[in-house]
Length: 346
Image (cartoon, rainbow, N blue to C red):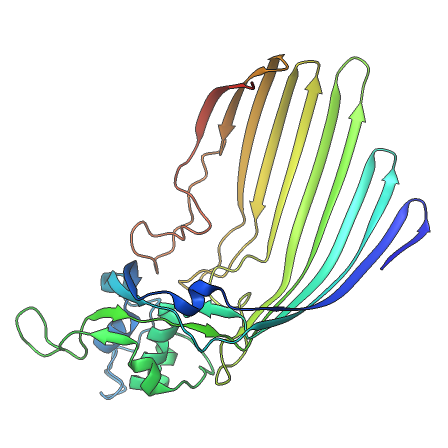
């Protein structure tokens, strides 16, 4: 629906239902292999660093944040294939928002949304399988070691069958508590549900001048209010915003641009809000600023100069990762760099 109480304001909303068949790859992917690199075996770390059977007064009671679990990092063989028993995804989507023309040169957009997916298809995380096997083998002592409360029950026979380990002996043939983690077989599966809820807004402003060129300003923000998953019927709901899984709560960007005859320049800043890090800490907001200048020689040729990451921001270190010790999904170690180029259109 769309409702206009006056010529400056638009109120809009929508609701819909959806379904989606699993991708052919999800169903019929042929068996293949790869490697998870830099993955940490927290179960072996637990088995070596904490003795749940020993004397409680002398046992080294530690958790994976305090223990040197980084030394248990390595490569694990991934055994991948499709799953022909998958069912279709079903969803509901709701949106409510407004567009307000604040003035002739300024416009504000606000949209709130909720997305609910049942039986969403995703591949299991190797860590989810690992943690489940640790819980199956060692019970509450292991989940306490991970600082996880109310760890959901799993089908232990199923989970243990997806982890391959070597013989429980060291390089000299001496017995050790558990064998080296060698392989994992994560399945595609219909998760019970996924739920996303958030608010997006943006503000745009422009100013034209007779002698100094035209100026453009924009700022936009996305706020995640809920990002929850229930992996299966045995699992509890997990809100990723409170879990240590690098789920950003918000992201903002802003830009200021100037255009005068054949010249143009832009300063752009992107801010990633704080996240719960894998090592149990909290990241700081991460801001990257870029700048670019261009000149049009004619309709077919322009040249540009740009500087990315002006402040030379480096990734935020997370000891739970193997080398290079940071989340490569959200941070880049490239640092500051400049580029010069020419575009020719023909």
